[in-house]
Image (cartoon, rainbow, N blue to C red; front, side, top):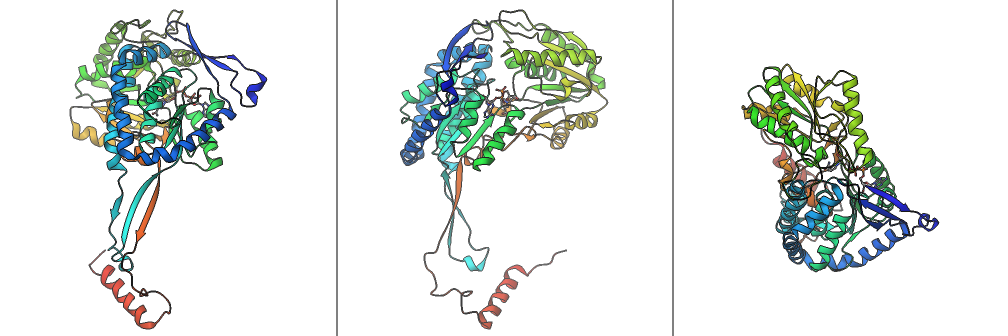
Length: 514
Ligand code: NAD
């Protein structure tokens, strides 16, 4: 976890004498300290980024793509080092880091290097829809914003931080990344990588620090991309309103899983265990609550509990040593423990787990809860830990109603052999992404938008919108051959007015309608 080692009076004036200690949550050991940047340093960083911007924009998409492809190779060549850094500052397993922080990022570097030119290409739009525009050239163009601020969380310190910087840079922006104070080392490693891959100075900078550093960053940039809790997201949006900059929010979730009686039960049970416990359950798109149709409920619960009971938890010393890693810091451990205790007090039963694990690192036992209902925190608030509450439902209709009984709307999943019906149910769930017979892997589909509804966010990452959001749209209208005087110009006269009226009738007045 991060701890502020020292603060001096100079810090209140924007100095960086204060440092943050970075701990390994799996062992509780201090790894190192990083500076806590203040407002003045953020100002300087932003000024440098603004100076670097014209040159970075001028390099063009092919030049930018070349650097991203070099970074892709660098990451693979240095995979062990990348994994070591991520594992040490998060306490997650090697496998969790490999699939996402490494696997996602190498894929994303290649994806944006290739697709940015398609998504950002000038678009010609037709001019024949209105006679006044006939023969004119209409073009939509995507221009970079300037300096983009990215603020990230701790659970995927590369994916949800540097991952968003890739499209922002490919769009021609300079980027300042403010990583979580708990996990800044992965972002510093990404900065080292980009330097070694030939990125011009100040195009990508990392501003280590806490919430105050993040707040200071918002005042210096032309756009903010924030990933984190809904509570902080609201503060970020308010701050963005002060300088009227675009603000994109990827926030918390309480993802429901609905299991129909005809589902492939073994696959659904394995998925429930995996997608609720991977990354220690600290995934914004974790399965956080499960609803199972009555006829298969007992068998499903038995299979999930057996799998979860067999999971190995502890210090990830090497690949394959443990299944479930640590909980990031004490406040998170308190939330997870609080949700389990609240559920038990209100009548839930713990089938396996249910307690914090033994130290010196921070752990919570992989936990399965049954006899749960919507009066309990574990069914309504984001838990973000290795717990899975499972609830019996009469039918999928009840599942949809309960799934939508939430302030969140990040993701959801429906499990059934009848995929047509699954898709129909999916369309009725209020969430930005709904999977049928799957979960979480949609995040790896970089051409598929991923963003939350309701209190889970604003905007989306991935797909065309995932890069165009880092641009200003400019529309161009070019008249090559123009009349000396357009028909509608001064002086007004009856003949041209009648002519225009006839043209409007001819163009828009034909055909029958209700
Ligand atoms: P958090 O909101 O506590 O912090 C996120 C970041 O915001 C950190 O870098 C923090 O220093 C910074 N910050 C804090 N106060 C700030 C302020 N006033 N102004 C600007 N920045 C400020 O979140 P967290 O605990 O680091 O991350 C966990 C949360 O992130 C969970 O709710 C999880 O669901 C969410 N998350 C969402 C997604 C998604 O894609 N929707 C992905 C990963 C995590």
